[in-house]
Structures are given as structure tokens and as C-alpha cells.
Amino acid sequence: MSTFMAKKETIERKWYVIDAAGKPMGKTAVAAATILRGKHRPEFTPHVDCGEFVIIINADKAVLTGNKLQDKYYRHHSGYIGGLKEVQYKTLMEKKPELAMELAVKGMLPKNTIGAKSFTRLKVYAGENHNQEAQKPVAVEV
Image (cartoon, rainbow, N blue to C red; front, side, top):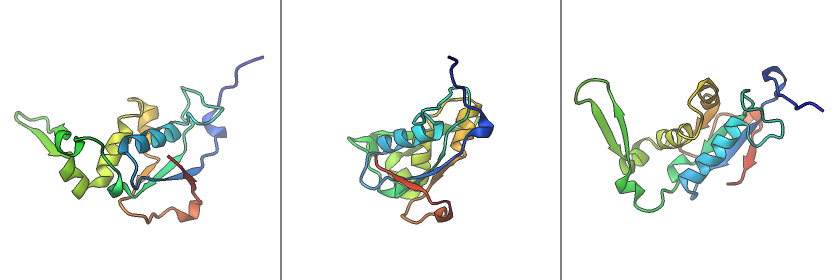
């Protein structure tokens, strides 16, 4: 008996919606990364992109536990001398909650072309409304 290997052409992608309201950001990001990667499927194949589409709503209502709002920083560098930029997560959650959730999910995906392709299937919204009603997304409980 041979091992089944999924092919990119035969995979049917579904849409899932995750409500982040009142839930820890990390747990929501783990659930999203698992679905984006396709690890929830029985036909998961590590070298094939067999993930699905994920919509995260209410990103502004996600919870950071402990003192992460004050102690955690998002840092990036411009590439120039003295170009380190840092933003406290309290400020980031107030101004761009979608970016905070995207960074959490992106950090949990593989750092290769499969991870980059998977990340393009993530849609994050600060509020309850999203533009993908036509795809009939299935709700996922975290």
C-alpha cells in the first residue's frame, strides 16, 4: 500500500471564519495558522500547499494576556543606521489591530514559499463585517 500524496491541482479550498472577540490573540492565531497550512485535513502533505482560506473578524476585541500590552513591542528596521522602529502593542492594538493579528499568524507559518502563499489567503478585519459573504464561510470555534 502506498502513501497518499496530495496534489495542488486536486485540492478544493474552503473558507473559514474565526471570531476573535474576547479570545486570546495567540490561540486565535494558532487556529488560523493550522487551517492556512492545511494541517487539519486528513490528506495533509508537508511539501504541498493544501491550506484553506481564513477570515478573522473582531481583531480589535482580541485579548492579550498578562502585561503584554505594556511589555511587548513590535520592532522593525528600515535598513539604515539608527533605523530601528518600535511600537508598543497597546498603541498597535488601538491603531492597527489587523496588523497585530497578521503578525501573530505570520510568525506561526513556515518561513518559505508555502508559508508566503498561505499568508495571502488570510483576511483580517477589525470589526464584525467582512466582504466574503459570497464564499459562504464556515464558522470555526477557538
